Structure formats: structure tokens, C-alpha cells
Length: 581
Image 1 (tube, rainbow, N blue to C red):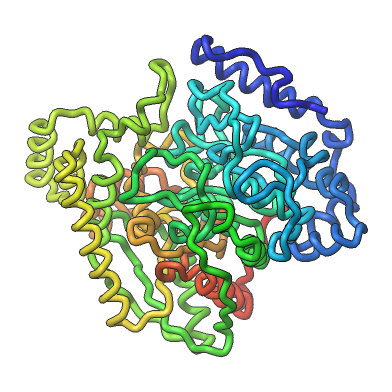
Image 2: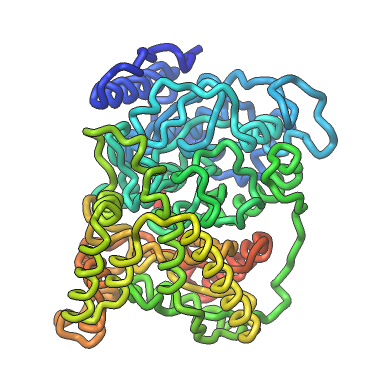
């Protein structure tokens, strides 16, 4: 059996290039050590396994009609192909998964007798893990070469829960350096590409998981989300993801991008390639009493919600005031609106408290330490995501220079959004940070009151103004483009993304004279930069999704809302059918 220590060199004293080469060699050795059958094409029997729902897979595994090795072979073949085509894996644990460890107690690594609520309810379910989730005996690199060859002594709470539930944890997936960015790329593992078009990104820090799911290499991905890192790859890769409210899903032992940040917390959240599987996974994790495994997890059992007989009130946010949705993404939102109206639901335009104001507060809180948490582990010759390089440069610029640039920006083109970012994004004193927390709470209260006043059940938005962006274009698009998603991290609302359509070169093209239009002229620098990479002809065939938002701890309701949307689209003849990989 392949051991994580085999092929591992003592990399601690090596240079950044040597560490990166050693880690990639280790990954390749893990793949090469797999049985020959894992490098063969999928058989008809493999495809039958891949077509099974999560519930069916567990049932057949329990009855003995499907073995762990049969399941692993079907999904392992797809994972190997996905790695070749998209470069989405950091670690391959298939050999270890064939000989799983004994179940552990919630609070230790020793054996214990499983209680009735701690049964193998996920037996036979392949689960991939973002490379920020600690697993005993493996590195958690989060894309930093300085973290190579530092295997963890303990596993994250979700790993121990999944092991007790019988899940098959077979691979870890790629992240950008420091798990912040729009492109999933690092010197350590290279660039992860979109399975629909390798010239485009898979999206954000869970991009490896998004690419793997779309490629059918896993049923569930355990990701994390602080500004859209689960929802962006769902949108870009045509899969499903839901950001949980902080504390609803076990997250202890998952490495955050900015350790110690409490003002805008990371949410550990799952993704899936099917909506029913995502909901079923949530139910079964809650059935395991995750709060027994994780002190930070809220003891809130799963609540059954049925919205099918109810006419709902949906509020649509058409624009965030910074980057208007591209034609492809706006069309997806229009499709959803039309489908819901045909079902008899109420769909209204919703004007929330200023999203720009909320993002201003959130970004200042995230980088109140001057970015030391993100940039501290970076080695001198280690590359960062272009958007993070821009943030680092901005944070390091003298404040008087930024204020001067802000004045010039306002005077020349009236771009208040960019001017405000320039003068406000700098390290904060403790008293300044506390004042921002107060402002954040006041902002949350405004949202609460506005939502109540409108009597909404859900809010609908685009997840991002663009489909998947071209590789290497993140600097033009900027981190602010994640505003449609990050605002709900600041609010701590539950928010899910489901795929709706694909970019169409004919219906989604910009007008030929678009740059002379009023819409383009009223955009600020951030919006114009984002639109500079939009090309419906080149993006033809890329997935586009829609975001369904509920309020805090409304995960069950959001999943049901996503189902209502999907069923409404299907009844209109607009069912999303993913490409077969």
C-alpha cells in the first residue's frame, strides 16, 4: 500500500522551486502507484456506479451489492482523468481508502462503539477534501511551499465524522496560494483549469473541487467559503454549492486564509454534482450530531421543510452597483424569474442596503492586519494570485499616496467605489477594527429590516457578473467582482448556487457599440476592467448559475428554494444538463 511518507523527501530546508517539484513528484507517485485498472477507460459497470444517487450508493453498499473497491475504481478513474485534464488534485489517497481506519470517537482518535446516531450513514460515498482540511498523516499546504512536508498529527472534525459515517475520502483538491483568489493556481501544484474549456479558470479557492465534481471524480467536495470560494466554482463549473452560516457545518481543523479573523468568518460548506445529493449529504451529516465532533458547531438538528405547496416571494437584486451582470449571467437570472412567475410565485425587484457600503466594511475587516495572515507564509520567490498581488500592493502603499489617488479618481471619472477602496484599505488599529465591527452589525440590522419590510422568502442574484474568466485575467476582474457572493459572508446568510444554462455566443454577445453605450460609460474602473475579459464567442458553452439566498441558519430552506427553482426551470423546458466527462 502506498503510504503518504513514501516518496516524500525532507523538503523543509529546500528552496521554493525544489519544494514545489518534490510535492508534484509525490502526487504523481501516488497516481502511478494505483492499480493499472485505474488508468483505463470507464466501463459500462463504472458508469452505472457513477449514475447512482448518494442514497442509492449507500443502500447498495450496505447490502453488499457494491463494494468499496468497485466504487473507488469508478470514481478513481474519473479522478485520474480529471487530474490529467484540469490539474485539480493535490493528494491521492485511494490506496489508503481501500483500507480505512476504524471509527473514532468524536473527541479522540481511539476506537469506540458507534451510538445509534453515529452509524455509517455515508458508507460508500466518495468525498473529496479541499487542501485546507487537516487529515492526520498528510500535509495541509493551502498552496504554500513553506507548508510542504509538515504532516498533521490530527484530523479535522469533519474528517473524523466522515470516517465514522463510512465515507470514502479519496483525494484532496487544489487551492490558490493562501486560499484566496479568483484563479485556482499556485507554484506548488500549478494551475487548475475549467473542465468545460481549459483556457478558463475553475474558480476561487475551491476550484479544484469544482473541476473534480464536474468531471465526475467525486460525489461530494468539502470546501470553505469566505467570499464565494464554494459558490464561484459551482457557478463556473456547472455544479451545486451552498455556503452555510458559520457554525452550522463542522469546520474545526480547516485552515482559514486569515487565521484568527472573526469579523468575517470562513464557512466550511459542501458542494455536489447533483442537488438531491447535496441535500441528502447535509441531512446525513446532521444525523451524525456534528456538534459532538466540533465545539464550534451549533447543536441544531436538521429541520424538514416542504415549500412545494407554498407560493413564495422572491426578491431579485439585478445589480450590485459595481459590476452589472454580463448578458449571459443576466439571462440566467431572467430565466429563473420567468420560470418562477409561471409557477405563480411573486418575483419583485429588491433594492437592499448599499452592497458597496457592506463590501467596504468587509474588506477593511478582512485586511485589518495589513494582510500579514495571508502574505506572511509566502516565500520571496513564490507567486500569488494576481488579485492578491494587487491587494498586497495597495495595503503596502503609504496612506497619503492612496488618499491622493482617491481624490484624483473622484475628480477625473467620479469613480466613488474605487476611490473609497483606495483610501480605506489599510491596516487598522484595535479601536478602528472595533468601530468596523459596530458598523458591520448596524449594516446587518439594515438588511434584516429591509428584508422584513419586503416580506421576502428568498433573494436571487447572479453569483458573479461573469461566467468563468480566462486564465491570467484575474487582475483585470479584481477581487471586488466577488461582491455578489461576499456580501452574504458579511451578513452570514445561507446562500446556494445552482447551474442554469450555458453561455451562448449569439444571445449573450455584447452590442458592437457597447463601449459607446450609457451603461458602459457609467461603469467605474472596476466594472470596465471586468467587462474587458467578457467575450460570449470565446466563452460559448461555459456554465452559468444563479444564487439563491436565505437568512442565517436557513440551510434547509435554501436547499428547498434551489429545488423550487430547478423544478420551475425544468417545467419550462430549461433543465440544465451537464456535459458528460
